[in-house]
Image (cartoon, rainbow, N blue to C red; front, side):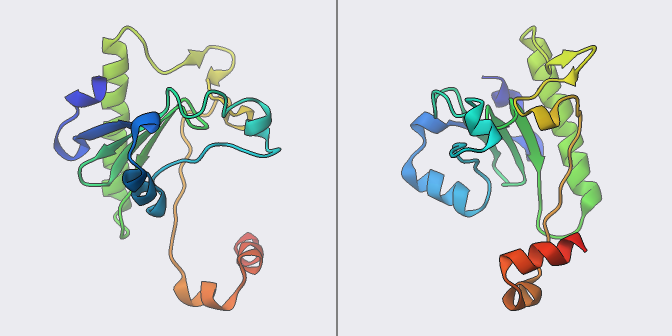
Length: 159
């Protein structure tokens, strides 16, 4: 598999969802590092994004738990770089190198990131159509979250 060629801080192991142990699944979900099956009336579930679950889906985890690649979740591939702390430059550097390494792996297999001249980068979710980059950040606010319900916290964040 192509992920075997990653090295340094990107080196790790690919796990097929259909073959993962319950212990590893629980660990990765508990850390927020593993996606879940799309269910319910939501757009993705209604569009069949969970069809044939969990076949042909998996996660690549770097040994250092700072770099992940989700395969066939909401997006065909989601490349994630994370770290506790605020070193955004280091996180972005690792992510950029990962994106380029994965691009090289795909191109070495006579493939590549799915791109259309009219629509841009192709995703499963229509809300992501054409985007080449989506970034997010999570912060812990323990004192604030003790005082507000999740709904109140969401309203606070919107303001």
